[in-house]
Length: 532
Ligand code: BES
Ligand code: MN
Ligand code: ZN
Image (tube, rainbow, N blue to C red):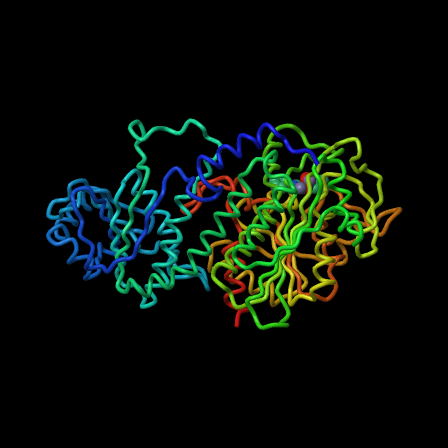
């Protein structure tokens, strides 16, 4: 194991100066509080945000907060051609009749009917939009009382605040030349007051969504970290930090994995100067002895392709080839932080795929922990090798209720689905439906892809039980077929997140390269079906 000493030293120093990683290091800190709508007292230094529905409808509370400015709104709206449509907004400086220095009206009239199962409104996205519109405002007062909205407004307010928090996320750990406040239009601190009907209820609801936001941010951090910093041993150390929240963390090293027979995983890591690891996290929030749910992640901290080396263009993106593992760590954080009433296993295989002198070759045959053999045709099809052993281990040892694995597994899933949907492959209709529904509810959408014995023909090997690639066609499906050979009767789903885990276009709630995709989806799956 070789650490890059120079760089780590610099990091250690930075840690001293800026405090522990992942905390207090965002360039903008936000202080968010819930207050009663009637306690919002806008002043000249404040930006006041209100929500406007169809035909410029305002709630009663919003009307009384705006006072005379409410009657001036239609004139401004006419000039700005603002009609209250969702996604549109109007910015008024020094609004006549209000003490606020600035007024932002945000349209919330849904543009079209939401798909079945989708919430009437994506409150998290709305939170992100508000922060985006507020720009460099230092003090923001939000009247969170959109007209004609539901009685569960405290849950909505919690989602809204989660959206605000996710929007502020910014990975700038390695920018040493941060602008000083004087020549920076961004404030160092944003104070946000969210006015709601019932601040206590909203605060309580926000406990869960705060944990969730932290889990998503942790996953983003891991994906964004450079591969010289986040190699397998360091990744395991980051996962170990979940012990603080009461998660049991077990780290298997190379010797442990050899003993277990995880040769497919070890084969991928053998060309790297960095040793491989497998981390098993356990959150025991459910009944003692109740079967756990299990999540498994691909954690390739850098995928050079190995001997079947990738082309240079864009290879830096392969630092994100651990987004599946990052999601599992972020999810375990969220479940533990919100004290979810469930027994959950998180298991991640962490390796670096490099073309060193000891690297695995095309033509090699490896014996997996299950006993099945795989002929390596292309060393760049490494994720399935890592997952083969981790899936088997988890199934064998924990007999879980289900296994969901996440992996940036194939470029082919990007060709099929782009950045919009993750590919879902499963042996179980119920689990697939639950994932699909949770996807619609959270906006982390999945699309089920076909599987079947006909595809298995494509991975038959002349020399071993299977080969690790299936040829040009149906690349995402043949990869899933290989994974399925390591799953017995356990309900199982594989999410191919190569298109959603990183480098997706920025959204209302994510402006960073790493998205933390899957944390909200799987938290919702657990919350809706497996708790209690
Ligand atoms: N990590 C890659 C898949 C990937 C591609 C993730 C683009 C994110 C963005 C995976 O290990 C890989 O290299 N897959 C190969 C498989 C092929 C050799 C059968 C691919 O997709 O080209
Ligand atoms: Mn690869
Ligand atoms: Zn890979």
